[in-house]
Image (cartoon, rainbow, N blue to C red):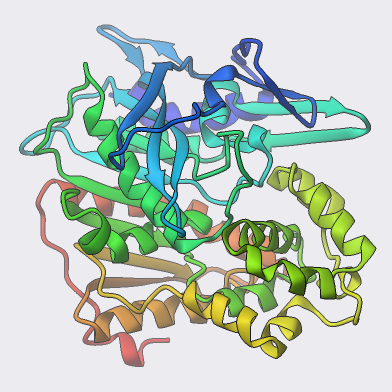
Length: 440
């Protein structure tokens, strides 16, 4: 048991040190000097059913330790499955299923958690399933470099240590090489999360069953993805019996998040969002041509192949006003253009009652994905009759927006995993909706 409890810390150390990297097979695509295996190239035709498996293969983990009866923390399978995008078109999504070596100590069948990753970037090489295999992804080609660290493995290994099976989604276009990643698109991401649960239960040779309780876990981009999935479950995937969701620092109001991110360490995320919006809604292209300067077009093209580390190194503290023909910021352009304003408004999370119980956690000092807009989402859910536990995370102001955002991820992670484990074990939670309107 002590070995399992130490796995997250061991994983972090191994990731930073670059230990245990597995070689990738030759593939058909290369992104910023990183070879993308053939597995990630979708077939011409996808299955009809949402969540249907397209293909699967064993996935060697960057950190894998021999145990008495099994390999710790467990065995991994790379998957590709079918989902449906915002426009109703079929889309291939990749990810990974992880079968824990640890036993499930709770009642009933071993539960399943869908983990939605936080911001990884927009290049195909940035996917979490590749990061599980490589730990640290480095590449260089044509004066382009890439750095991607699989930080989500920390949460994944915590869940595995509890005996909970995990399936993570790479999201549409992040991994699968046929389209750009539609970053922070609530429908694309929500569908991908729900269909990952279906795909995991379609795998053979696992210990989960049709009766396995399903939970969702996500922080930042992932928090928005699981929040959207909880809202969409009743209409899109009523067969996925969603019991509980942890939504950490969700970008529920993209207008507020756009204004907050501009000029910070993570301003590159604005480029990923714009690239994704253009993929989702081609009718927006004339507006992009109107407002984007040559520098703006170049930045968006550059960012489209970058991971989060690359974007921080290359674009930190820039302002979107440097990318426009008018000198306006992206927020100002959204406010001035009705079609853009309507598109961003349609992305808002908090307008539909979520399924199951949801724990919304957000740092009160988070000024990157602002605390206030996440709290508003929780309050909106309460007004809609949702079962909500609101958890403000109080940490000192780190001055740096990125640190104010990452701090709660690390400080609350153990509590979040424990909370989700207890819900999956059938223990009740106490809603905070009665006091949320007056809480800071």
